[in-house]
Length: 185
Image (cartoon, rainbow, N blue to C red; front, side, top):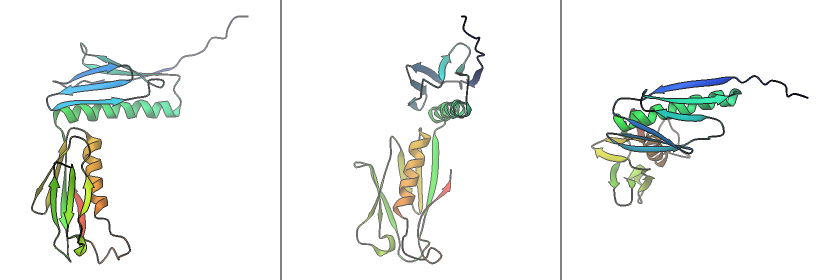
């Protein structure tokens, strides 16, 4: 008895490669090299086939007989590739502002231990600590904190760590608005 014919639907998405960027796929790892550095990211090769075509300057993503999750996943992988290309060409940057009404907050960066130290927050004796993630550069100028890096996730997580370190619990947030907040992305 012959097998029934199976209809194969193929969903293809193409991501153009930015000028000056080199993309390679090795196994289930995508590597992106550019003028600012190199980034790599793993993806689920069971759901998406990724192929980098340097001659035509595009990355081709394919999935077969896609369900809802595969349709979403192919878009997610494409967005990650675009963010990686932007990171190695332009980089990512966030600016945070130090706000206080009660006690003057002093912020310093410990490059050796990869930490941001927040002194005198609400008059506390010991400093609050936020971890710097990945290869991110943090600088402090007065009441502004600048966070720069090539990985969007690392820059965002470092900003979130700083914000989380100055979270106030068990006090009225309308009165105690002291903290460090994201100003610009």
